[in-house]
Length: 253
Length: 322
Image 1 (cartoon, chains in turn orange, blue):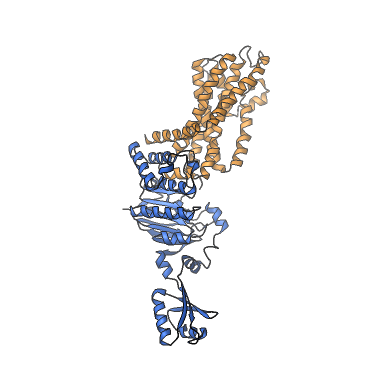
Image 2 (cartoon, helix red, strand yellow; image 1 turned 90 degrees about the vertical axis):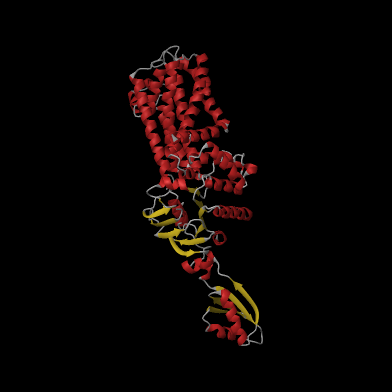
């Protein structure tokens, strides 16, 4: 009980923080909209090719964009963690009886909300551009990608606390972000690529989430791909949260 | 039972931050850890407040074993680190309320306590402002408030007045004395001599991970001689004669000639001076001028470690402690 209360209090604190800096909310939503407005118009010319059904390119592209948003929403956690190491906030919280898991989840929950709300907006905006919405599938898709956000958020926080330097964190996160994104087939499905590329993709947890997301967006709920997506994303989130909790427990020793 | 006892030894990394610190601190007082940067003060405080595990040794805070039951220790202590730790994107009041709730206080009680602290620490004019806009002194007061929100038995403060201007320091001292008078035991680290001297009821001088002296500031200083400079009146005696006269006095330590004056070390200046003057008067030596320099904690530090506190501080240790 007190654990749930602590988590709720800490998540609320984070959300207040976000709402006080609306610029980030604005940025979070404008980037995917820019993809829709400036990148999506290129796609119809590719329609009918492998992996891109005629008349349904957005159905392939939008889930990818959502996955990009899911990852992006969690990336900031490490920067916040370093800031809070420097200002002593983490140290102060560690001396309170607050659960270390609650400290991690407070940020994770905020990041999930910061992903989910703009994601819903993007879905609605995509419809007039020709996106076919299967609402049940999209509901499950948001849940799936929320797990991805959680995994990114907790990993980023753990990396931040471990590295303790903004510069090193930036190098590691940007260094990982691009290959992870490309090897997930976010912008174009990996099935367009050669075998070695698809092989590399299979080593990327994000790939399974994106594959599952495409099926869910198409309205397929019960499939092995979806189940695998959930299994991989869920396991990643669990591992990352456990890692971050461990880091909070030992921060600054 | 609120008496504090601790005994521990630790060895951390390649640098021995603490090499066997044994101390017991009674409840209800302000206890200071004085020492140069990197002496092991912060490490000690962090072990006592469950942030760091000692490699060996045991520590009890408010009767609870820090290693065995850190969760219970956390409930009983407040901690204000060097970096403070207020949430700068929230208001002062939000900070206090969240802190209270995390300690398991009820909503109503938390609100009441927050108002109480806002009065006690003079936070009223800015308690609804975002902390980022606070001055150093305002922020430090709020951070002390965070440390005592849940009415801890023991409050740990790591360099509480670092970076504060003299007026804010004096205010904070008054507030800390007020807290002690309300029954909170306070343990603080400082590298300021005057802070250790004027604020602490007792103190331990720490250097290179060891306690080199312990006692009330008065006791510590009394163990060390005062410096007395006496200028004899011309015609009654010259400085050399005066020095000869006092050489055999058991109260007088080292004697040094300084121009037409003599500088003496006097073990206990309060009683010693009177007897020295008596002796000189009996010999017909008149005194033209006297100046007295009471021993300071820096003299104590110098005596115990062979270095002045102002020059001490070891960069390698400082980094290891950070």
